[in-house]
Amino acid sequence: MKNFKKTLILLTITTTFISVVHGQNRIQALRDEAQNVKITKDPNDTTKQTWKTGGLFNVNFNQAALSNWSAGGDKSAISLAALLNLYAFYTDGRHNWDNSLNLAYGFAQTTSLGGRKTDDRIDLVSKYGYDIGKKWYLSGLFNFRSQFTKGYNYPDQDTKVLTSNFLSPGYFLLSIGMDYKPVENFSLFLSPITAREVVVLNDSLASVAAFGVDSGKHSRFQLGAYASVNYKANLSKTAVYTGKLDLFSDYLRRPQNITLYMTNILAVKVTRLISMSLSVTLIYDNDVKSVKSDGSVGGPALQLQEIMGIGFAYQFRNKTRAPTKPAQ
Image (cartoon, rainbow, N blue to C red; front, side, top):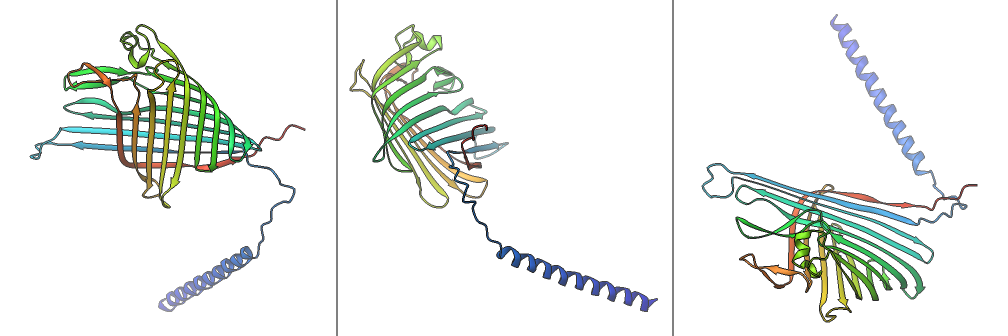
């Protein structure tokens, strides 16, 4: 019986060894075969890729809870911030069409202060250009900006003052001009003729002439000059900076007052799904009044927003799509 067991064990080891050797030889044969394969492009395939699409989704979440904590602090705090950036670029011959959509929303909930939003943004840009040579494009641009929900200013812990809502304000801009694109990651759009509509649908905000609309009205038309600078730089293999600067002057009312809107975003990829981001936004609009500490309305002031976070990030891969062939 013992000899039978030894024979069986020896037979099993021998069979396993032969199988492993045979498998390794087969794998090596496949590798050699793959190395000798040559991939060639069909010379008749001359299809151009006209669409390039992609995007980035980022969400940051923080939570804290305290109980009998000697260092002090709120009993509980939760914050959530999400950012979605999508783009679709079209190029075919002299025709160029760039589209981008930026959506952002942030919210914080604490025991002492309650719920307050920390970010709220809708920004859609669509720009068409026709190449006239030497990196210049005859272009038309459309831009829409607003926010999702009501926003408040908090003069003190027990007082809040309504400052914004969806389409209060809403900015619609339509512009015709020239776009200079010397390199892929930089563009300068200049327009001497730009129509801009400021919309305030909320009745309480419209009644106090918020955002430059006349008291009791819900919109104001502006005609002026517009400039937009866009820049993107890969600072390293894992860090990307994206900047945008918009300037507008209204011919119809105080053209010396320049409206400024500037965004700066630094995104650093920590791992494949973890990223860190820093966002700094600057706004100056002479028609937007500030709110003083006592809740009264003050004069215009530079608006500054800074958001830094680390969390989950998913990047949509760049996709290209060829034009659809007409039916035969």
